[in-house]
Amino acid sequence: MDVLLWVAQVFLAWICLMAGVSRLRLAALRDTVEVRQAMAGRSIVVWLLLAALDLAVAVALVLPWAFQVVPVLTPVAAVVDAVGTAVVWVRRSGGTGRMLVPSLLMIGLDLLVAVGRWSQL
Picture 1 (cartoon, rainbow, N blue to C red):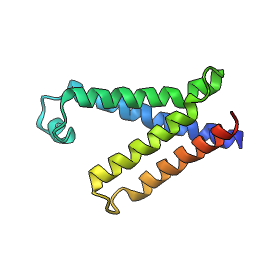
Picture 2: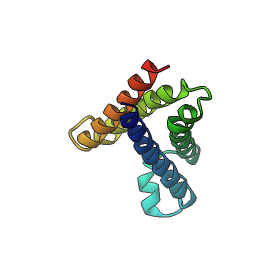
Picture 3: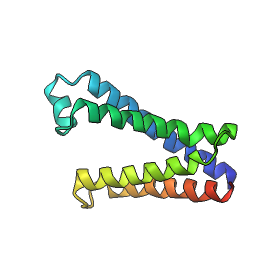
Picture 4: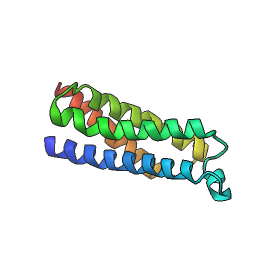
């Protein structure tokens, strides 16, 4: 079970890391029309805060449990990521079936990590 949790944690951290980095890149290139459309009318401050949250979740999914320094942050980060994924799915698709499978996969992995790591505290 521990190996499965580690694989899920690293996978989710990688996705969060890539989301944070891509948001930072979009924020740096905010003067183009395509980037303004991708930012969906959000201000640059909100966009940078979302990027910082993605990067913080990526770090908190792996490092606290790996070094056993405040390991409770790992399941908390997984729950934060699950809520963030649900919010993004509802906002982008309006709750329709578009992007449902990847969103449910991420939420399921987040909940697996949260429950699995919480039970090991």
